[in-house]
Length: 123
Image 1: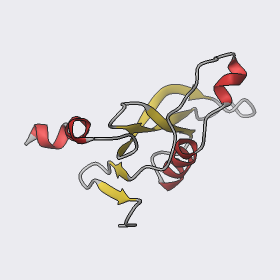
Image 2: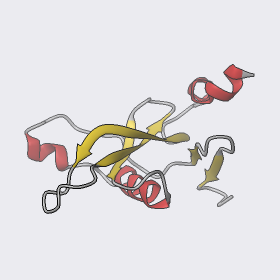
Image 3: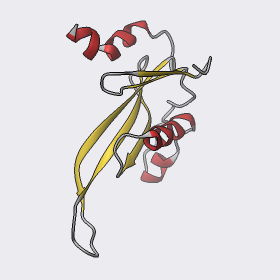
Image 4: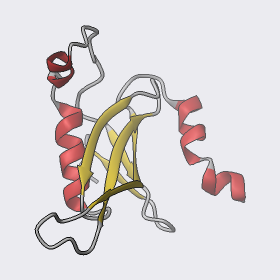
């Protein structure tokens, strides 16, 4: 039972036949603290949302936000995943980041109730 629940991504890695077929969203609370300089009060932590392609195991999209996992973090990561990435060129990196496009199925891990969005059928 544990393997079925916790190794879902690994199962899809073996079943994926082409890029963008199965894409998984995952969220991490980073150990990065930002303190408001004006009032030096409550530090804020950042959340990283990643969209990972099961076939290539590549990062397709990402979002870095103050808010915890929410629809905005998924939307921003999807926006980043769909369009060609060029920002790394500004940093002097010359290699191409060729992982982008519209996922066929997006899996959102909502702890106990995973949500699956099929972009082909709309279900």
